[in-house]
Amino acid sequence: MSTKCGLDPYRAIHFILDFDGTLTHRDTLEQLVQVAKDSTGDRERTDNAWTKCKEAYLEDRANTMKTINLSDSTTVEGESAILKDLEPVETRSVDRVSKSGIFQGLTEQHILDGAAQQREKPNGVRLRNGVREVLDVVNSRRERLRQDEEGNVDDVSILSVNWSQTWIYGCLKSQLDNFEEYNIYKTNICSNELEGLKVSMIPSNGVITGGIFSSRNKLERLTHLRRVSASSGSRTPVIYVGDSWTDLECLIDAELGICIGKPNIETSELAQSFKRIGIKCPHISKLDECDDWNVVWARDFAEIATWLSHNS
Image (cartoon, rainbow, N blue to C red):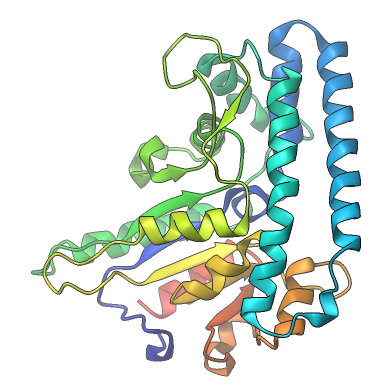
């Protein structure tokens, strides 16, 4: 494992993973809304409300993008400023969904049951290839690190703009056999939540809470999640895995940022962002070719697992 990015294979690493489009093949909000349609008894109203929310978001974002000159962004600071300009779009979207009542009446059990059914649905949530293998490598590293005199071991957190912590937890639990072995609890998931779900059996009022809607919000939470070694006083290095423009600031703040999927300059806002500000993003097998930002890409988690196994 290259020392260039500050990672020592014989010291603990904090893995912080995005959820939608990173751990999963694609965004999962459509499936979460489907749970609401199936559970609250008014499919037509929920479907119409969701369509209006999506259309309003796309129009709002398109109009905001027209006011931004992307070609003016040539630095990380400039890119961060653009992402901050887009933050109100995300906030307005969340407000619209909250006020629409789409998720009103949902309980924790509704969401957990809906998540558990995803494996059987043709268009259900699917984890990316290799997620289990990465977690197995992390578990092996934990066993070895527990024997270290410092007692620091690898940790795994999920950091997401998804609207429900319960949904993320339920999807992971239902799709990873022997899930308990991986020591991923709700407390490891830093995301938004539907108000009321933290009180068991109480229906949610449908309001999305948590304040994690943007790149800046995610970076703030990543900073909060960072651990400090009790023995050495130094912070535990972070490997952050993400897939979208919203992950940019976390990817470059981590000791190693890994983009899932080869950045496609034609279709990926993240790839276009890298190009504007001049960040290299070689394949994970060519880590030595990355620049000081230490960002690489991997096709899937299987490639990350292979790299970890060879460098641990």
